[in-house]
Each structure stands twice: as C-alpha cells, then as structure tokens.
Amino acid sequence: MEDETREIKKERRIDKVDIISSLPEPLLQHIMSFLPFKQVVQTSVLSKVWRQAWFSFPILEFDEFMINSSREKKAFPIRPYWEQILQSRHRNMVGVRKMTLKTYSRTGDSELADRCATYAIENNVKELVLQINQISSMWYNLPPIVLRSKSINVLKLAGCKLELPRSDLKLSLRKLCLHNVHVDDDVINNVFLRCGFIEDVEVIKCQGFKRLKLYGLSKLSKITLYNNDDLRHLKIDSLNANSSLCIRSNMPYELDICKRLTSLSLSGTNRIDSISFTEEWLCTNIYRLPLLEKLSISHFSNIERMKISSCRLKSLEISVCIKLVEVRFETPNLSRFSYAGDVIISFSSSAALTLSETHLFFVCFNIDP
Amino acid sequence: MAIMYALKSSDNEIFEVEQKVIEQSETIKKMIEDGAATGEIPLQVSSKTLAKVLEWCKQRQHKTVENENDDNKGKRKKERDEDDDIKEWENKFSDELKADKDVLFDLLLASNYLDLPALLSFLCQLVADMVAGKMPEEIRRMFNIENDFTPEEEKAITAEHGWAFQP
Image: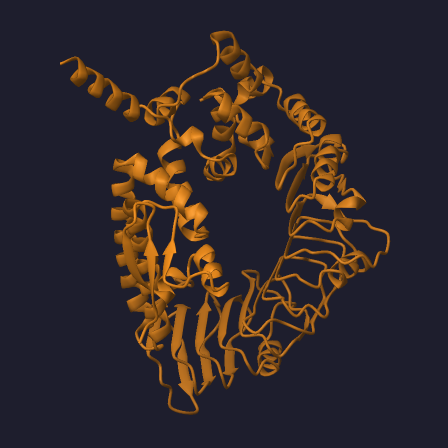
C-alpha cells in the first residue's frame, strides 16, 4: 500500500518535471526568437533560468512605434529603459546578432541610434536595422562605422543620410535595404562597389542620386527599385543566373542591364503625362534582354499599343494600362498570360501561341454615364 | 538499388534507413564521410524519438524527390495539392507532439544533436506558438516551470520591464 502511494508520488513528480528550462540556453533562445520581442522580455519573469536566457538573448528589437498610447509612453519612458539595457549588456560583455532600432527624431540627431549602432558593430552584429523617422526635414546622419563594418550581412536603413569617406574596405553585405534615405551618386556607387557578395538590393523612395551602377556583383539576384524620383540611369553589368528586377517609377529612366536577367517587373504611374513610359522604351529594353522568361507590366498609362517581342518569354502579365487597346505578341514560348484591364483590347500574334494557362480579368475603368 | 544504413538507438533498436533519408542529418552525413559508419551507426537517441526523427526525414525526402521528377506541365496545380498534403501531415505531426511534451523536447534535443536545422526550427516554432500570447503564470503551468524568485524579486523584474507587461 505504502509502496503504491510512493509509486504514484514518484510518477507525479516525473510528470511535473520542467523539461523546457533544462534545454541548453541556445535552444531556449532559439524558441524565444520566434516570439514577439515584447513577450521575449516577459519570459524574463518566469524563472532564473529564463531571466539568464533573456540577459544574453542575441536579438534586440527597440521599436518606439510599438507603444501606442501616450499614457503608456509617460508611465514607461522607453528610451531610458533601452539605454539601460545597452549599458548593462556593454558592461557584461553580452553580444548581439540582430539589432533593430525604430525611433523618431526632431533634430536629425539620435544619440540612441548612434549608441545602438556602435554597440552592435563592436559586437560583430550580423543584421542591423535602423529606422529613424523624421519629424522635421532633418536627416539622421548615419555613423560612418556602419558602412565600415565587416560583420554585417543584412543592413536595413530608413530615414538616414549616408555620407562616407571614400574607402576600399570590402563589405560582407548579402542584403541592403534603403528606404527614404538620402544618398548621392558618389556614396551609393562607392558602397555597391564594395559589396561583392550582395544578393538582394532594395532601394525605395530614396533621393539624391541620379546614377546607380551595380558593377561586378555576380551574386546579385534580386533588385527592387521603387519611386526613386531622382534616378535617371541604371546600369547593372553582372547578375546571378536566376535574377529578378522590379522597377516602379513615375518616369522611364535609361536602363543598361546585364543580359542574364530572367524576370522583369515594370510599374509606371496612374498619372497621364508626357514624361511617362513609351512603347518605344518598352520595346527597346525588352529586346535587349534575350534570356527574359517572366515579364510583368502595370500602370503604363500612356501606352496604347504594345508589341512584346521576346524569344524565351514564358510568362507575361499586363495590368492596369488604361489606354491600352492592342497587344501584339512575338513570343513563341509564351505559356502563361494574364491580363487585367479594359475590355476594349485586341490581341494578335505573328505565330501560333502555345498558351497553357491564360487569365483574363476585364475591368472597365472608363465608364461613360 | 538504394544504399541502406543501420541506425542503432540508445536502447539498442536497429533502424534500416536509406542513405538519402539519413543524410539530411549533417551529423550522420559526417560520420558516413569519415568512414566511422561501418556496420551499425550508434546514436544517443531513444528508439521512440528516433522513429519520430525518421518519420520527419522520410516526409522531407519524399517531398524533394517528387519536386525533382516534376515536369512543368500542370506543376502549379500539383504543387498546390502537395502543399495541402504537407500542411496536413505537419499539422498531424504537431498535434501529436503538443499532446506529448516529453516526446516534443526529446525530439528537439535530437534534432539539435543530429544537426537537422529544418526540424529544429519547426519544433522551436511549435513551442513558441504554444507560448505566444500566454501570460507568465499560464506558461509556468503549461511547462511546469517553477517560479524560483521571491515575490520581491518578481515585482522588481516586472517593474524594470514595465512596458512589456502592459496589455
């Protein structure tokens, strides 16, 4: 009888074993890395093991926009809290693998951003995200050490101005995202010259540069350029075998693109004006890309006729080109075609098409009363 | 003819497995390359856990082989169906693990030891999903985590990270 009770007790005790806390710390942190940062911080109260795991957690995400109510902002001033975390980590020599700071600045200065960047780079951070929203028209000057860091693989910058002394130092960036960044021709081209390993480039709503030269970047496979109003000339001289280029722009610019490009997406604007994309521009640029397999065209508001002449093209999407009335195909290998737009349109082809998949969505934009 | 290997669990059970299936494990792949794997490959993993590991590896292997054999025709529809099948399989796999946390954590440790990064991430995500949105007290109950702080210590931590404890 006594034995039996003991058995049951023992079983219960086994049942109550805390296995998760006995996992090696890197595994516990791997689990934590899938949680929202706020909840990661909450786990520090679970037990001493978890508190320790939080102390050395290699991902920091300081996001001032996450805190919504002004009441909360007053009750828990967030910047001093972050400063304290940075100091304590610095003091205890705790490293960081991924650092995110999203904040705003009235004056363009941000001591917090400077300190985050410095701490992260001193600790060989792999991924750095700095988003400094401006309240006035002042840019945050990116500390020069960021573009000298050899450890960073992924760099995402927003609301910054890039200035750097000319440098030959090679960077190990795999991915670079610039959103709303001010950067001139010299600086942007200097940066890309040093990024021999880069695979993914995203430049969105940036200003200050007219020419973008992506030279000698043989690993480059994804390029996204949206609404960079000053850009006039894009030159890419080498690409990875499977590469895609996405352009969204109010006006066409001069393209000089490596022939290896396989996927191209072009998006214009709803505005109808004289400076928008023309049929000639489209024809010329597609003609120069013999390996193109996938093409998407949207918002070419000024074009009435389109001739798509491409030997290898397999997939074509046309959408929201409001004046378009005629599309001519010279595409012997086209197998997927998708069209979304006005009903009044004619399709013709010089040779037999072997389409296996066609989607047509007719939407009437110009409804006369 | 596929090359077969014999894996021996910590409780001496033998599992005959195709080379392609077990080579997903970097640890075993290295053992084979180093020539250390003549005869049975001894592993520090229980038979119950190893069976689960192999279940995962076979599913993954199945998936890659089918993709390789695909031609372009009708590929998209097939992919969609396959994605559904894989989702369904993964859901069933997850549900079983959620019901038995001992197996879940044994498997997590095994995937770390065998160097199976995809399985490891899958399991870490699974545990995180179980934790997500729960209050500390609920998490403690769920995993039998003993609160070894004094009430004062706990209060101090909550105060220090005040913003994170707001709803």
